Image 1 (cartoon, rainbow, N blue to C red):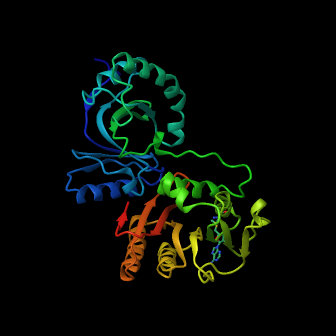
Image 2 (image 1 turned 45 degrees about the horizontal axis):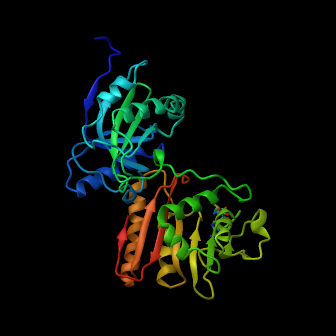
Image 3 (image 1 turned 135 degrees about the vertical axis):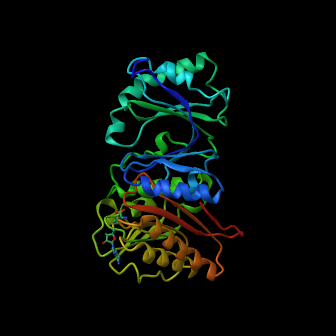
Length: 363
Ligand SMILES: C[S@@+](CC[C@H](N)C(=O)[O-])C[C@H]1O[C@@H](n2cnc3c(N)ncnc32)[C@H](O)[C@@H]1O
């Protein structure tokens, strides 16, 4: 045997994709979740700036939406290391798990890093070869509900095989919801609010809660990307910021630009939405948003919590606990969803909504 002979090892555990730089937060959060599930997993890989995390052990992965820092959560089934330079297909086919007999789809993925991007030319060339080989062996083309096969290349020398239940995992390759920048939006932040709506609200909820004639307040609105996103959906917007609005937002008849302090401002009558992108301590923004909903100034809130450089998970937990304490102390039923979006950097995005029925969930 030479050093380049592929070694295929069966494996178990969770593979999670995350924003590069957030591996420790992602691993710690997943590990804590495993503990609460009573699962015996340990953190096997969480190298800084790698863009992925691996936990080793036997347990079903949680729903990807229930973790803040994971873009995707997969069940690992095999690891190939080293992956040969030439015939990469054979070891991958050798490593296929016996179950399920047929996959609904196959995705070839790599970390969302510069090194990862260098693998994309290879995966584009390799994908049709692998797809054809799987079809020929009748392992591909099953119903949409069947597990998906993921072939993840942590780097060019390794390939991991993993499976995902389509109902429990992110429906986008690499866990990234890609959106195109609208040419007339005043800032790239517009993409963040669009992603947040798609992440947290079903198509039905978007139709119900985001339509012509509704009213919103945008705290920290300038230059106007979030306001632009609300206008697009037909909402009237009170845009609160001492800074200037740009582009079409600046002179739009449905925008009322108020140069005042976003922490003190309250509307004369309730609005449907409050959104907030002010750069402030997470606990201060969290408390503000919970008080808006408790005070019935708005029914839905979408906001960012900027994370500190250190102890990010602790700061986030503390801010979310503040929200839950305020809502519960006031007897308000709510839905709270939290995610680090693809368009988020040192922050996470939160949806908080008043609920009519007795449902109190955090995902
Ligand atoms: C990250 S930017 C918002 C970007 C905006 N969401 C967009 O899509 O274009 C943060 C904004 O919050 C505003 N801001 C910070 N503190 C504020 C406060 N206390 N009251 C009102 N605006 C504030 C800043 O002036 C700045 O324009």
